[in-house]
Image (tube, rainbow, N blue to C red; front, side, top):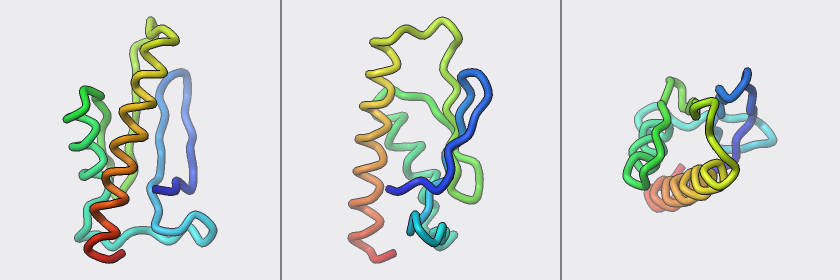
Length: 92
């Protein structure tokens, strides 16, 4: 799932999920890609929040350690990969 913009303050990070990174084309609203990534991340044990349109926010505690960051990013990557596969199976 290609993000078009990643921004944040401190450990608060927002990621905009887009259909095409180059054009920054958004996904069709009915697909609810952000909510899908959120749900898949929750299944993997990572808390993040979906914000319309298809933006996710990640806000780990300030006392997070390097191993926990790595684990969280692994879960996020799996959630993004699963979401990509599901969305592409029904067509963008």
